[in-house]
Amino acid sequence: MKYVVTNLQMKKAEEECDRSFLSYSRLMKNAGTAAADHILGFCDNRTKAVILCGSGNNGGDGFVIAKILRENNIPTEIILANGEPKTDTARGYFDNSALDWTNDKDRCKEALSEANLAADCVFGTGFHGKLPEKIAEIMKSANQIPLKFAVDVPSGVDSDTGEFDENCFKPTHTLVLAAMKKGLISPNCVDVLGKVELLDIGIPDECYKEYEAFFKTVGEDVLPERLPSANKGSFGRLLNIAGSLYYCGAAAMSTKAALRMGTGLCTLAAPISVVKILASSIYETTYLPLCEDENGFIAENCAEKIAEILPRMNAVSIGCGLGNNEQTRALTEFVIKNAYCPIIIDADGINSISANIDILKARTGDTVITPHPLEFSRISGLSVNEIQRDRISAAREFSEKYGVAVLLKGAYTVVANGKEVWVNSSGNAALAKGGSGDVLTGIIASMMAQGVPAKSAAVEGAYIHGKTADELVKTMPKRRVLASDIIENL
Image (cartoon, rainbow, N blue to C red; front, top):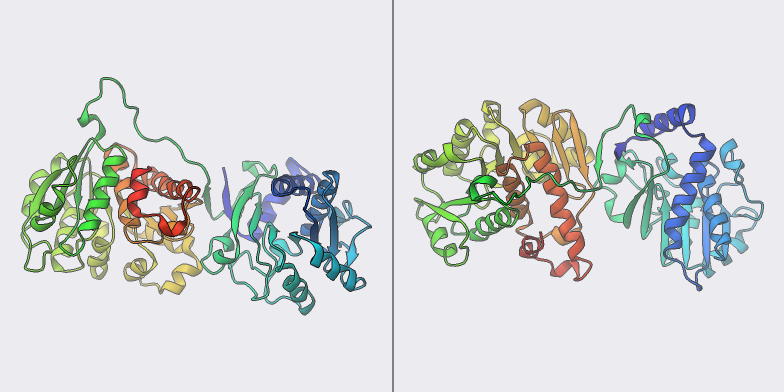
């Protein structure tokens, strides 16, 4: 299991590991070895490396890295940014050949100018506030190097809050050790981390007595097996209430994603104008045409038609492209009160009930809501800044209060189901495009219709959604990826 931790929680886990499993010295060797093995994958016969080491245990990791790189014939210089190590564990790996920035500044600058690979082991989790002037000068030179690895946390980034000094180390790769640090999933700093990798250094799960959340790093196959005797009814009936004349695409993408994810039967309930547009291109769904107003949004009397088929459904999704208006509010509240199957509420479904959010307490079945930060602000009463400052706590507290699973979108999507919280590791900026959220809703709704519990559907659905984007960007630029590409490649 992987975890998201604060600095104090990480320290306690290391202490427990030292008492019961592995010594601090062994953990340092494991950390340096894991980081070095990763770095070696980027080295060739032209590589010249420089390792920036601090005076604490993160510096000790750097000494181990330097030793392994040299053993693999990589020319490597060590620069002491804050003098010789001050901890017993780091002193055990100290290399006397290291250059001291204070005493050998010119040689250090020369080493930095000649290097094409740098590893930052100056502060790790020990940084708070502002970088000292000397360290800022070192980082300014190091940031000119093309290939850069931060070991655990980039120096100048607060790993509890995500706040960072403008002169911080700006890596191409951040190699996080043992557990994800809470500040690193903050929107404050995700843009300065480069590609993030989580490295195992041997701390057993038993050592994590306290943690903020689970860190979702691999997918699980939670969908039902498709036995030879199965029929379309074996894989659930989904009712997708979505779309309006202005937002036909939302209805199309959420429906197609649900079908591609394996729903046996899907019914799209949408305004008549939307049905007329989509029926000639989406053949695999059935349609429930709803009366509409003069602007192409659902009309006031739609609940009666929904009520007729609601008892036969295994899951309901509502909100994608419906429009934020009184009709959407009334229908969303009707579904909340009358659907005894699991439901997922997205987009305008969320916006429409923001003034009456206590309606969620009327639910008797599983419920997933999928807000982005602004939508979550409307229903939680928190400002976007407050939400983004601590996404884990914001999602957990809302989930506990209203008894729903909260999927808070964004980089490192957070899924909270009561006290349990998961942080998703998959996904990239290719998903920063209209329609991605509709696809995610379709994925999760489909999984719930097939019998996957709401919590698992949200966690695994978010991972699959992001992982599909991760695979796509291996063959095309992020800017080219469309929401429909995600559907086709699920």
